[in-house]
Length: 101
Image (cartoon, rainbow, N blue to C red; front, top):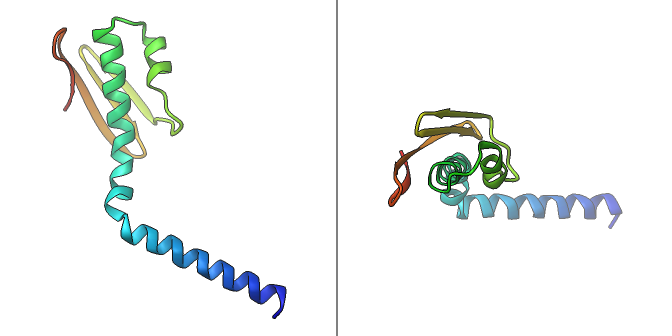
């Protein structure tokens, strides 16, 4: 067998494995985009309103490998857009902290 044939067979095998993984774990894969903005908004809200840290510190604290697209801080609500999904977290109280809306 030639090197081209072996490379082609390996490539097809890898694609089949990836497709199998996506089909098997599609529920978890498709929920991932919402986690980015929900995590960032909740962590920023807790850091800023409960722990009373500066805005810059809380951005650094909540930052992840996947960057966010948009950020809004309105009163006691934090709204974040990441991977085209928007989530908000609101400050409830000192004792209860923040909740994802």
